[in-house]
Image 1: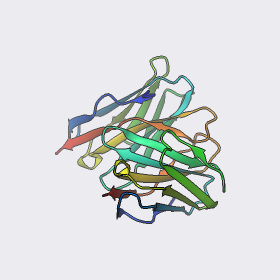
Image 2: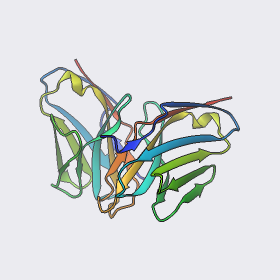
Image 3: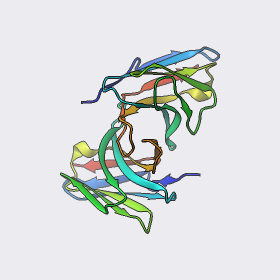
Image 4: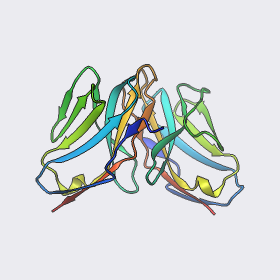
Amino acid sequence: DQQVKQNSPSLSVQEGRISILNCDYTNSMFDYFLWYKKYPAEGPTFLISISSIKDKNEDGRFTVFLNKSAKHLSLHIVPSQPGDSAVYFCAAEEESSGDKLTFGTGTRLAVRP
Amino acid sequence: DVKVTQSSRYLVKRTGEKVFLECVQDMDHENMFWYRQDPGLGLRLIYFSYDVKMKEKGDIPEGYSVSREKKERFSLILESASTNQTSMYLCASSEGGGNQPQHFGDGTRLSIL
């Protein structure tokens, strides 16, 4: 049972445009959400997170939006750059689980020059 | 910066061998985690540890065991390697206390022949 779903395995975007990566979850006990970026042959790198008490968090070109009623979150990258080409994983933490994360299957983003 | 170091980037072993994957973190983190990453399946949690000598099963513990004798070191053991354990193995650590990101090593690409 996949509690965190990334339904788009891949996404291709033109450089300078907006990239929107989506993530859905089913467990209403999740209260903390994270996005990781992964380049080939490297470990995932933490990008940005959001607590369930917020609906938006920004960090430079990256913004994460959380819609708790829809159990949906999204990562916006504006403007997209070729160096953003990577696999992006959505992850969620259940309240009181002590940093234990459930990951989605990932979306491969390709930013075309 | 958090540094999580995995002892080998690439490893080739034979079926039936006992395999040790080592992970060390330098930030005095309480929690440590072992994942495997397979195409289309995302990151799946094998085992985790909240403290020295403590271990908890993750989602796919079968065929694996772990050891945490010191706070900074978390070892994953394949008791008798099988070909279906060929995968990318990722170690991570986090501060503990909830709502803290995990920080990952660069992974070990393990092939079982």
